[in-house]
Amino acid sequence: MSFPSRERLAAPSSDRLRITHRSRQTAFPKRAQRKLNGPLLTGLIKSVYTRMRPSAPSFKACQACACSALRRASRAVTQHYERHFRGSGLRATQFTILATLAQAGPLSISELSDQLGIDRTTLSRNLRLIEDQGWISALAHGDQRVRKMALSPRGRKKASAALAFWKQADTSVEPVLRRFGLQSRPMVRAE
Image (cartoon, rainbow, N blue to C red; front, side, top):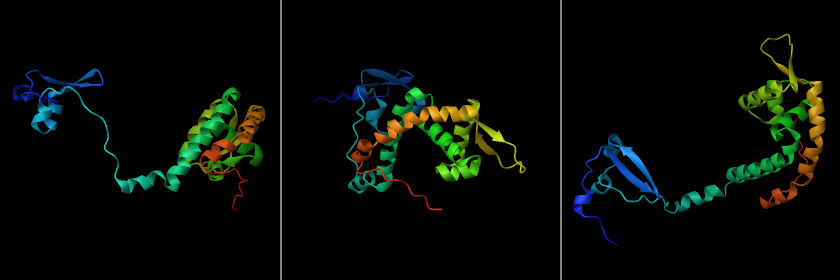
């Protein structure tokens, strides 16, 4: 292995430093060069290695923690349902909102948020998309601060048509759950 000569390590005369990375050249302005410390980094760099050092042993447990494992499982289950909903014109999250409104009737955004376990900001964004499609509508309420959402006839028809997609996804989710050491169980909600 040969090292570059001292002359090659001197600061380049051009206004920019070129760094080759995976057969690609990236130009860094002069001000970025000043931030790089050490004589080796002020010269022309032929390649940059992006290999990471092994993580500290104390962080390995973080990958196996309950939160991380449940997030991975949740993502896999959501992707499974999304694949099944492709032909329905709905996303799994949209179907869940429509199904909840079909089951419970008109609900305020706070009530719907509590039932679905979704924060209000995320729910409001999803409701706006569904409302734009004409699947739900806001009902007039005595209190101007409260906005009750109800399923429209068009939304009821859309939810009914998508129910077959949901059943197919729900009956075939078991292998996805088993990959994460889980099994499907009926959910019992504490009142």
